[in-house]
Length: 328
Image: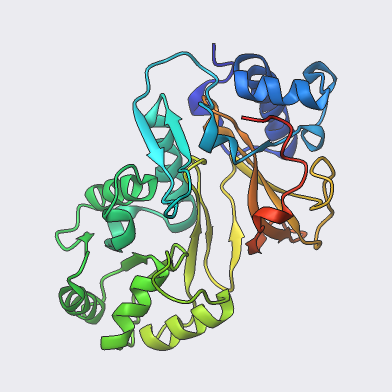
């Protein structure tokens, strides 16, 4: 049985409170999650000997492609799928309680941006809308619905309509959140230009093979110029997580209180690095209470002294070390 009240997971926590909850979740999952339990066994890790979160082994994210990562025996309510590319296997996040995801993104949005009912939410997410099982589309659709604004909605190929709506709302002084995948935002700017005063432009990353990949600074420079804004916001999330971190500019992200980032050594997956050093991104996501809350991602990043963080790139498959302990 889940050792933590689901509502308590999303409270603001002191560092000691977070650590206490995270350790409780770890012991629960080390016992109940068959994949994680086997992984820990291969490592020779005794969960009872783990007394601080820095010593918790993180499950390589690749296991979501090959295993059912579950800590509870309950019916699956939603299956979120990664976008993947041709010839690659998709990650599958089996969600037994979708209300955890809903609580996480609603509280997360409120934590960073306030009441969503103040915003008209425009979503330009064509690559996600064109497939099934996108957790980003699930979240965006619910935010659009809950915003209650008549002009909130998705835009697939109607860039002209999006441009007119953006210009109209911004001119009228309405608060707007435009959330879009990077290539689609650039597509919009090939035909239209803006000088927005009341709009937050948020990119969700990824060219999805549609355009040449750009470093963040170059991408944001183009987007700032095209939209006429000073900063580009970003969302950091993934299929395997039920929580998101947000950046309000310069690619510096902050996580909500129930999510924590740690950085691991690229040569030794069990060794953590201090602030300021670049390594693999480990995520503690307490919302993943029913799957696995301790995930070693394939992203590279670094943490600042105030616990904000940056994403600096991704591992090449040849660079992943310390993850091949279990052969499928």
